[in-house]
Image 1 (cartoon, rainbow, N blue to C red):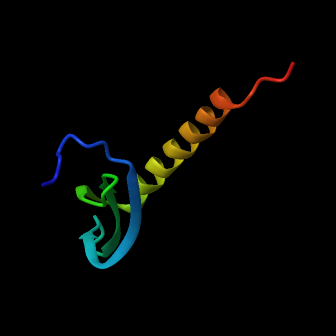
Image 2: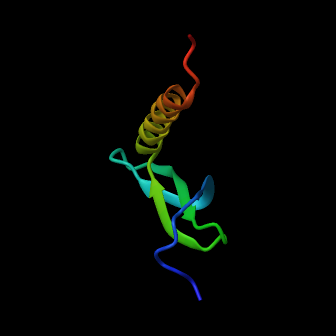
Length: 77
């Protein structure tokens, strides 16, 4: 049985060729698929983002990761 309260600790992003959305200019745009899962690999969240939103999320994750590293890095005397 899947524990719906299990923390989501695995993130995976990919391009699925059949996941497109129509843009404002009538062109089909490729979506970025983001999957979140628990430690057992049970998929709990699936999100499909347009490239601009995926890029914004990636930038936010990079900024947060760098900040987290600075917080956990030993301080120099």
